[in-house]
Image (cartoon, rainbow, N blue to C red; front, side):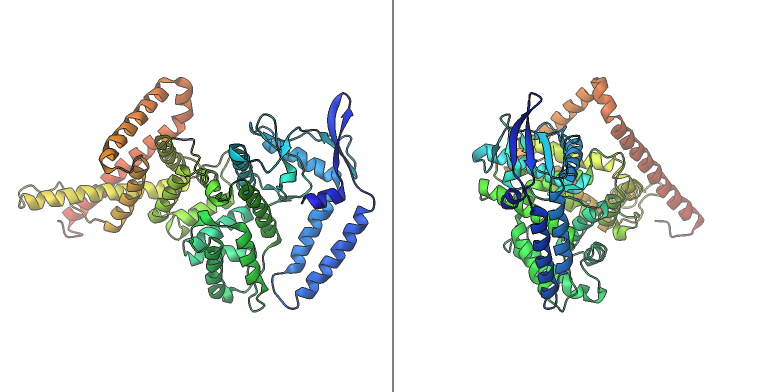
Amino acid sequence: GPALEAILGKAEAAKWGGKTVAIKIQRPDVAASAALDMYLIRRTAMWLSKFRGGDLVSIADTFGMQLFGELDYVREAKNCERFRELYGGWEDVVVPQACTSLTRKKVLIMEWVEGTKGPWMGSDGIEMVRIGLRCSTDQLLRTGLFHADPHRGNLLRTPKGHLAVIDYGMMADIPESDRYGLIGLVLGLKNKDIALATENLLSLGFLEDTTQVDILVPRLRKAIKNSTGGTNKASDVSFSKLQMELDDISRDNLLKFKIPPYITIIIRSLTILEGFALSVDPNFRLIRGAYPYILKQLLSPEGLEQTPKALDKLLVRLLTVNGEKKEIEWGRLRQLLQLAETASKSYDPSKDNDDDKGSVSRKTVDLFLKFMTSKTGLFMKEPLVHELAEAIDGMASIGESNLLRMSRGIIRPLPGGNGPVNKKRMVEIRAVIEVLQSALSVDDDADKKGHDRLELFRGLAQELLLILNDPSQRELVKPILEEVTSVTQMVAVEVLEIRSSRAIRGVLGLVEAR
């Protein structure tokens, strides 16, 4: 925090080669003082471990690594350059350039950035929090280079209204498997998917004894509920409360439960950011504000040449039955789409929506289409084709059955028609379609929904025509159009195969022809 920063060394402005630079010189004897402090902290952690669980020694060691990392200014300069490479190109984020050639272990030189420290009130403050939240979410989901100390002393609002990050002493590299495993754990607990929650509890290192899963999972679900103030809505999670709830569980010596050190780093960082946000707006909810970024990065990751293995594994586990890639979990897909719609419509937790509802609705549908036709959603193509073909055959069979009944047997279906109907699958697919239709309903007034939906379809059709008439835009959507065409052709072929196979079996008497 700011106090620790002042103890270790304070940055001052200076002129160097005609430019203003920041020079930070480490205070004398800081390393010796830090070593003594860590010795005492670690001994205390060892003593407390005799009376409570939680692997306090590992947490103390992680803190020690972070602390001594801050004492190495060469390491900090390298962290700055890594962060600059990842986020220096963002139009609303400023990352100073480190003078690595002049930096030494106890002397740091970097570009000076003009700006004001927070908290910033009003719309300026909200905008700074939104930028910081988007950047932190991207670190957690995409790059893994995590800024572990985003307090107000390390963040500036520049004269142009950009967010400047100026301190890189406390950074952490979070492995890809752990980042997506943490999301899988939260989703497993929230959706009461015990198998998914257990799988990630073990892989992340929260639990060593598998026989205690039945005890731990209900307690973790209760901890998440308590951290929401009892609403049990993920959007209401308070990270400061969650940290206290997890700490209470880890105190229990009967449970072999421990909070992995990197989880402590993530929660601490989000708690700092949450406190920062609440000082700007007491009604701000961090998770609610992060929803659009999380969903977009999960379903349509940007800046990656290929889908990370850990993300692919998580999505397969979430969106196919038993994670076998054979059947789609339509209920789970519907939940994600509903979440995407809700998230987009309430992007700013302070209710300062910039997008009109129609635009947001199109984004929801666009996200769904992009995911289903992207490399990330490629694993769903085969089961999607099979289940759409089955659904189309089922709808046709329902129509043929009704026609047969209404004509009293006079009008009979063609060979292979009037087959069995998978009613459960029909209901699930219909529910997903209803969510997409809901995304295209931009007004709560029932009398206006039909008109508004028609207007939106007209708007989408106009946008499609503009895209098709613009060569550059046509090239961008070409892969999506090719995939849609491919899926449509494959569905048509499979429907024909289903009906042909049924007709042949009926002719040969292998099954009773209807």
